[in-house]
Image (tube, rainbow, N blue to C red; front, side, top):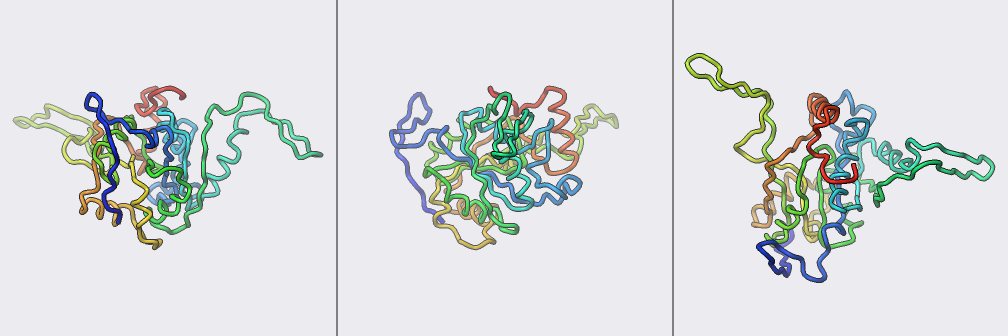
Length: 287
């Protein structure tokens, strides 16, 4: 596992500022884990991968990428696995979606009539195997990285996260990796009882004690340059625990909105937030 990698820093008004030669946030690549089977959402994932389940007519993967794009980030590396062809087809045909097409059968040319997509993303579709674990998938994807630092997340969670603050936190820590810690939403309603009477009923509140892995990572590439090459390499079971034991895993505490799409109920919740116009993750421009 990678040893601590030090980076030169200067501080201005208490905030870290990258010195010359360090990649800016907008220049970083984002690795997104898209290969899981999503067994708890079998109603939706029998014929498509979990990241392609839709919120408001767009895959949750698209929503995740838009979160990063709102901070000027445009380079994505997608770790494909289960039903990866669905994600391939989506991006290979992205510019044709919703547009009129003129097809010349003789020359095999296709003319797109109408507006081109406003997303100017660079998307690497990386085949990482049908059964590889999360750490192994990310290790394979690192061969497409353009810098010594990168961002990463899962393909099933959205948040109104401040990615710039996350990145600054990582640089200031000097550690090899940073994970976003979040308070999960409770699965059951909370009640307060006094003298046999319910004085508070709060349906599925956000838990205020205890933190969980919310994804939205920052990594130094060296972590994976020195990692085990087995397909069984797990991000959560090996890489992150090893970094924590070596005091190389920092935490960025996000107290705002965060929600994963883990169950059918989660999918309904995210779609209801979208329909109501109260989708907290849709911040910044470009939506």
